Length: 409
Image 1 (tube, one colour):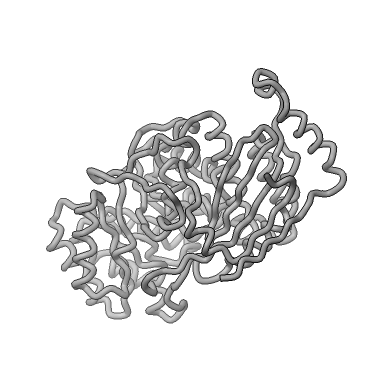
Image 2 (cartoon, rainbow, N blue to C red):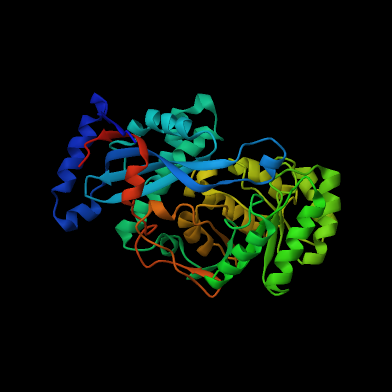
């Protein structure tokens, strides 16, 4: 696969900042600790991760989407004048990857010469750099890779795992598996996948529902529950494909399975519908993964539309925005179960006051040199500083576009 490399230098009026940064790198250690550090370079990579098997959920069965065959990722690698480094990423499924890369490429030069400590200010600066395309959706998802990289850099500089920098409440997080429970898998495979995940140390299983034949959903859930027994935590996910009457009927039919939660029974933006459903069912209602701003999540929270909130840090703009949302969720005593990107969300879940759940997907593992440890139904925090990840050779091979800004080492 061809890799296009482009080197972009900063604007002339940034030279003074870069000169100061260069001098900071030469300072003795004691002086460097008090001298403001600056961002020296930014490298962006667009990566296409192929999936071994095309993946289908309810959105495919309703004809709204095609099976998923790859995940597009945007990586940002930062270096500073004092030699600190950080790496972050965002992603898109099915569409949007090239758009995220293009937007990130436009605003990346605005980071050169900036103090990497000022993460919230830099997020705001980048938002305003692209304000004409809004403050949610692709516009802010493109910023997530920068924001995550800045937090990774800060934690690495402190010599701490990110969760410890934020203030961890626990050293491990309950983990459930999703990657083996999609609708394209026959029921026999579904059951075997669930059993294998439990054998590997995962603590819960999520099954996709929303099949056009509702009896098929019940058959699949029955098969999994019978194989796993009543004590294994089980979740179901309709991926927004039911209308309000169907969600109520199916929600009542699923009560017998004692689900940990029923996920995305309605359109993600139907806060009132979710609120009515949550009030009518004994099963907790979970949603939020498809929302792309704190403001959108606040609509769920203030309407009591979710028992379990499922934010996705890359989708809402990064860790800075996630922390603001987590504070709102904590205030309302909500359960937390971040969506996807476990390499990031492990740290954020560990820092949430109430016992959360973490979603296990093995899809992204080939991109990184490291592996996260799972045992006894929980995922363990790595002792490595920052996020504790580094890009693999596979990630480099799957890079389809790359650009550099500033003085790249």
